[in-house]
Image 1 (tube, rainbow, N blue to C red):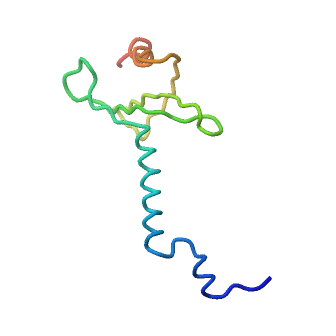
Image 2 (cartoon, rainbow, N blue to C red):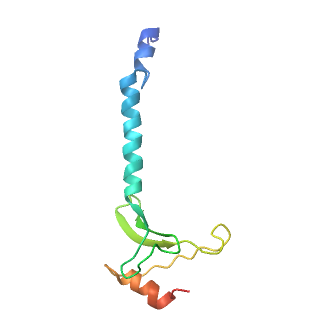
Length: 110
């Protein structure tokens, strides 16, 4: 096997030129935007006139080997001490608003 010359080594270096670096930055931005599209911070709910007095996030979590199945979630941050309070994971079935009604009627607002 013949050793590579210096120019061959330099040309084989990925992202050496500016165009390749810009492309790499664009790929990173697109990947991060795709992740942020899967979750949203909820500021208000129908029937509640003001901003919510707690942090509510909703989104999808991919499960399985290839994240082919997406589970919808509601995340309500603790109002006391989010860094120390335990995290409860509670799953319910059904499409639509059954999750929200189950949170309200089965767990309650307190």
